[in-house]
Length: 177
Image 1 (cartoon, rainbow, N blue to C red):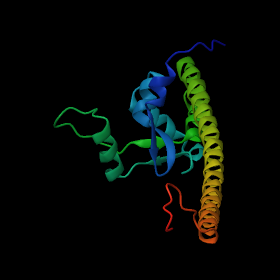
Image 2: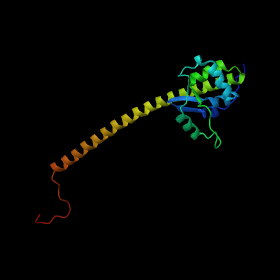
Image 3: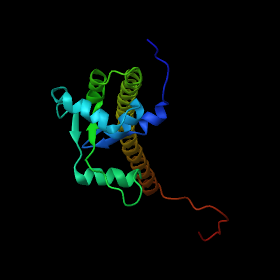
Image 4: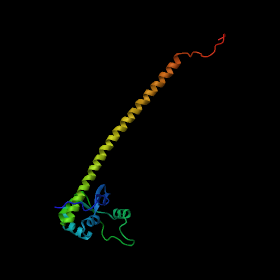
């Protein structure tokens, strides 16, 4: 089977949205990537609804749909969408390969799943980095407190030394002094 790169990762990643705290892809974007009409993709999904539980796919609300549309202007002025779009999670995208059998759909699906995996790994790497940064910040706060304490002791020591010893007069002394 051919596994050549059909579409750049940048194009695919630009079609991944964060909706309801999940990374998802919309039906129209997936249809475009697979080279089918959105209607065809949705019909295939509806014929196999038992394969798409809510954690695999969900329908956007009107508010969510409007918010996405305002971010990516896809409709010409005066046009409306007849149906609310479906959003597919990573698992839903993987399941699409079982209902769409074209070679292009299979190859694009492989790319999308690999990209989701890369994004997850990147997120984990970022999380590890954040933990390390927090650890360093804590160490720096502790060091700052210790340094402030050392300066406080040095100030007290200097003040103590100047109180104990009377200062010797310096300079030219007159016989009456």
